[in-house]
Length: 121
Image 1: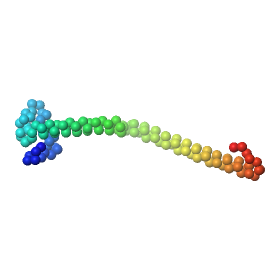
Image 2 (image 1 turned 120 degrees about the vertical axis):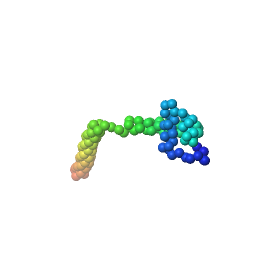
Image 3 (image 1 turned 60 degrees about the horizontal axis):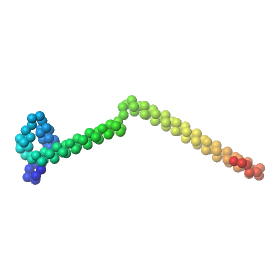
Image 4 (image 1 turned 90 degrees about the vertical axis):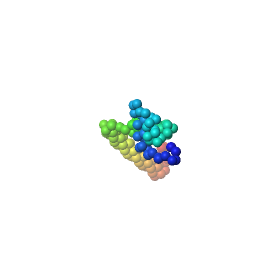
């Protein structure tokens, strides 16, 4: 829009857009009443279309990526708890195995040192 004319807010531009989209709307009369040129309307239409497509794309992507139902959430929460418990059990078992391995090696080393013989692994 040109400098001398009143600037329209985003809401007013959208109202203008909607008014020109009405069935049997006289676009020329609407533009004169609003003090807007056809090129300005085309720019508004372009922005509205781009914003609409972007909003719809973002919404659809969000629905696919992160949204789950309450039932799904409960199932996922239980699965996570089960996996957490299994991982904890495996970590404990691993720690015990490492401890017994170290104590077994030290026991054989101490035994071979006291007898003067070298034992096999």
